[in-house]
Image (spheres, rainbow, N blue to C red):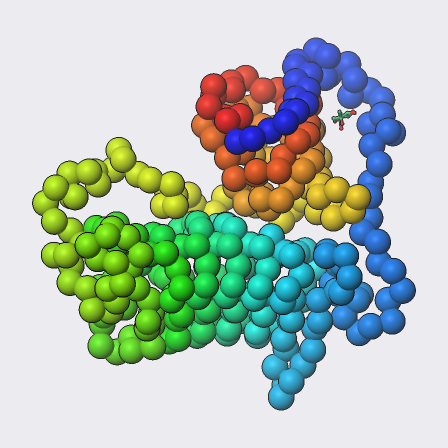
Length: 314
Ligand SMILES: *[C@@H]1O[C@H](CO)[C@@H](O)[C@H](O)[C@H]1NC(C)=O
């Protein structure tokens, strides 16, 4: 993790207890998002993110849409209505689909994520989307994906995966088998391997599993050599949606006094300032902040930290 300056305040035991007497020392500014004007129908629902236009929420033929295309988004924003049926997020800057990222939007039927910069999809990224039928992931940076991410989308009938640099090894074998089931005829059409060289331009729908998994490759792929892009399964547990997310003046996630026992596992990756003070976090696990690339300021005061894994702040 490229962190320029991390400010960690570990006020352990007594220091924290003493301070508890006085209420929080006022200086922290609580930025609220600038909501200029507000004449538009969507502006009360949606926070402005990119300088310029807010996202549009509208109803068309009785179905609710969110149009947030080309807004430089890197994550879903708090405050989007939960009863959306269609979410248009094309041409943004999303890089990671985090576990539970869409789990609030239980009615969602279509999700358009094409032309982003997605290179990693966590195994529970689509958790809760059991009405989803259409998922557009074309034109991203996905190299590897396994079938397991689609466990939560049983109704998926239209999936676009082309224009991604597919790395065709045994790792994507479960995905390829899923795409090749005859009834899944609208899943994954046109997607082609980018690497390795001998499979370049081969269509995922036509590749045979022996071509993906030859013997030598199986050895390399024992669980110890998990590569990035294929996260270990983490159960949805501590949820960062309890926290307040402020966009202005800097991306801040305020999780102060939320009774958290662990660092939330779905911190939006663009958070710059993270306040975890006054919780019950006793230990920091390895790679705890791995995906929060922009993090510069981390406040862990008043938690009673007992153990910090040496890898937790990498
Ligand atoms: C960290 O949080 C504590 C408690 O909320 C607060 O008193 C302190 O000023 C914060 N430190 C920084 C550097 O923001």
